[in-house]
Each structure stands twice: as structure tokens, then as C-alpha cells.
Amino acid sequence: MAEAGLAIEECRSGQPPAEPGGGVLVFPAGMEAARRFARAARRDGRRVVGASSLAYEPARADYREWLALPYVTEPGFEAALRAALAGAGLPGGALDEIYTPHPVIAERLERLLPELAPGVRLTAALPDDALARQRARAEDLAALRAAAWELAVPPIRPALGEAELLGLFSVLEEIPGHCSDEKLWALLETLRRCPPGDIVEIGSAWGRSAFALGWAAQRQGLGPLLCVDPWSAAERFQNDAGGAVNAWAGRMDFDATRAFFESRLALLPRGSVNALAMTSEAGAARYRADRRLETPAFGATDYRGAVALLHIDGNHDEAYVARDLEGWGDLVVPGGWLVFDDYRWAFGEGPRRVGDRYLFGRPAAAAFVAGTALFVQRPPERP
Image 1: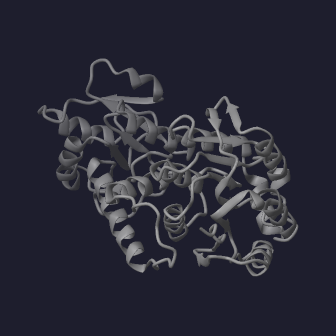
Image 2: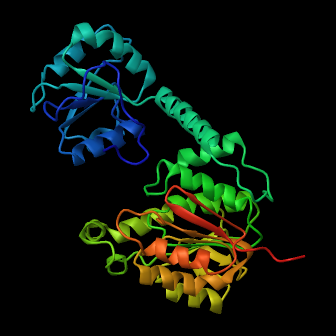
Image 3: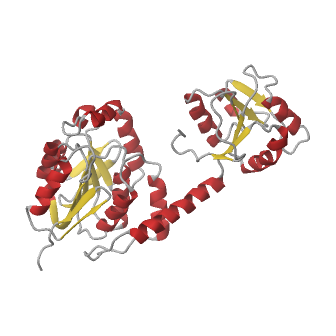
């Protein structure tokens, strides 16, 4: 798997990916994308050989095996490259792949390799690849928009612009999580229909839906985002879901997950987001007691004490979901929204049971299901 942030690799030679074997030549080895690729390849147990045409290359120390190659424009480049790929002067022997993040070198190698070294695969991570991914993402968003329903509730605020949506969904591609594009779209549309108030998410993990909520809430002029998650294996244990979910949760590195969450959400403006690393019950008590929250990761955030949108996405046991609703539900303002994640869930019925009791136990202005989540709007105040 490619390291987060690394451009997706494209096989320029059209050959299938090689099995880990002879090794990969990284050239020029000092570019940041090359160094990231090399680290990821070494973690996968691959042999990595660095190469550069610079007389002084600071990245030299990153590589166990190293080659000095002429510039691609110099007459001796082809002969030197042929010898290098054959393993001349390398203790590990011949190489079967070249990786480059440099567009000029990639173009040159694409023309040279079929005759120079026909068995060697060329892999390149280039600006064109990023542009292709953006085109694909734009097509995905167009299809999502075409398939989206029209909510009966009229929007209060304008829709996000094309460039804003494309940028947001491109960022979200780099954040792990199980929040589908359809649910993300519904969250964005719901925020357009929210009264003023804070955004609260119970259960954030890596921060995929949290980033979308926090970013869009700022664009829409809503209140700050509060994320409540204990980032704890003990709190993830789910009696209702069987062994599969617990086995997966048991393998999670919750400290690393929280650090990833903080690094991504810290990109949002100061004062627009904060997080409580505690249970939902403790978080509700803290929120009710003091509207100001200050943490090392996010600084100080002042909350309004009234919730415009409550996203319940923590432990999916029925008892936990019920406690989340009990602790936070009465804070949702008239016209505000509650979102029960995994209302449709393959591993249990906790969210559906609690969501149904809420939906059918009191009046609702609107309700719909998007992705696997149930969205319910409280009736607005009468004029």
C-alpha cells in the first residue's frame, strides 16, 4: 500500500506489477516523492537502490545501495543505466524496476527502456497522475449529484461551489474511514438546512466525516465542531456485533488513530474545532458544564451550548447508542438534525433500534436514509 500522501503510481510500460524480487532503482532519489516511495518500499521488504546525477546529494544517506548516474542529457547515460540495471557494481545484483517522480526523466525512460532493458518496469508518480485523479473525482461528484435526491426541506444557505466540493472530496480521499460519498453528500446538504448552533460528532476515529463537517460548517457560517471519542479499545468492544468487529477493533492502534485525527483536523481554523478524548457520557457532562474547551492540539474553542447537528457514530451497541442519544439529544435545537450512523448495518441492529424509537416516538420535520445513516430533523419552532 502506498504511503499516505504519495501520488498513485502509474505503470508506464503497461506490464503487470512485478513481484518483490530484484529490486527497484529510485531516480532521482533525492526528490521528496522519491524518498517517501523508498521508505514505503523498504517497509514492504523490498530492495531499494538510490541514484542521482548530482555531485552532492543529501539523500545519499537514506539508501543502503547507491549509484551515481550521468544526467539524462549526457551521452553516457544510456550505457550507465544499462549497466546499473544489470547489477554492475551493486552487491544485490540486477534490478527489475525503476521509479521516478520526475516528468522529464519519466518521458526519457519511457522511450529508452523497451530497447535498453525490456524486462524492467517503469513506475512514475507525476503531476499528470494527480490531474487524472482530479478528473475522475469530478466525474464521481457529477454522478453523485445526478443521483442525489432533492430534500423537501428548503436550504437556508447556498450550495458549495464546484471547486470547493472538488477540493474537499480530494482531501477526504486521504483520510481513512467508512463514511461513503453518498453519506458525505447528505451531511453537506443537511448543513445547508441547519439552524445556528454547534456541530457534535460522537465517534470520530481518523476524522473523515469530522473533517467534512468541520470544514463545511465554517463555510456555511455555523458553529464550531466538537468531536467526542475515547480512542480506546475498551470502549470499542461491542457485545451486539459479534467477534468480527471486535477482532478488527483489537488490531487498531488507537494512539496512532488519534494522532492522525488531530493532524488532519488541525488544518481547520483555530477556534472552529476541538475534541474530547473521553466517553460520550463524560463528554456531554463536560459540554454542559463549560462552553470553552482548550486542548494542546486545537487551542481554545468557544461553543454555544446548543447543537445544530448531532452525528452519533460511536459504539454501535444498542445501549451505547441509547446513552449517546440520552446525553446529547435534548441539546439539539428546534430545526436541528440528528444522524444515526449505520442505521443499516451488517453487524448489528443497535443504531436501527434506537433510531426507530426516536423517529417514531416524537414528531419529525423530515427523515431520510443516505448511505447507511438515518437523518432526522426536529420540528422547527413555530413563528
